[in-house]
Length: 172
Image (cartoon, rainbow, N blue to C red; front, side):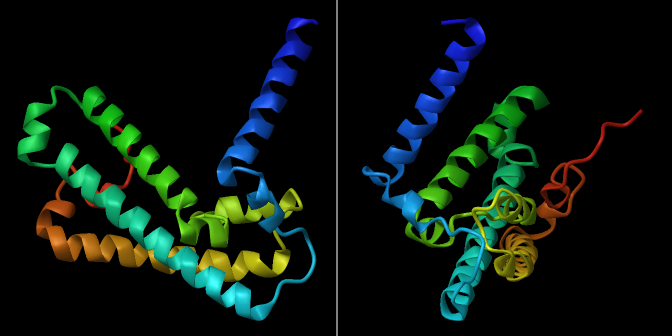
C-alpha cells in the first residue's frame, strides 16, 4: 500500500469510526438530512436549538476570554499570551464538542455557524430551505450571547484585552 493511499484508507477508517462513535451504532448519520424538503415544524424547532447553542457558545467564548486573557486572577497566573491562547483554544474546543454532542446539538446537527450551514447545504447533506433560518438564528444567538456576557461580566468584556472576544491583529 502506498503512502498516499494508506493515509486515505486510515482517514476513511477514522471517519467511519467517528461516525459510529457519535451514537454508538451510526444512527446519528441517519438524522443527516439530504437536499430536499424539510418539515416546517422541525425547521423551526431546530433553528431555535441553533439559536440556543450559538448563544451558549458565544457566552462561553466571551467568558473564557474574559477570565483567561482579560484582567483576572486566572490571567495573572498564566504567563504570556501564547499560553493563554492555548488555554482558550482548548477550552473552547472542548466546549464546542460538548455542544455538538449534546441533545440539542444532535437534534439540530450542531452547526452554530452560518458558514457550516452553507457548506453542509453545498455538500448535499442539509436542505437549502434550512440555510437562511439557521443563519438568522445563529446570528441572533451569537449577538445575544455576547450581550449576556457583557451583562454578567460588565465592562471587563469591553476592555482592550477582551474586546468582546473579537480577534484583532497585533499592532504594527
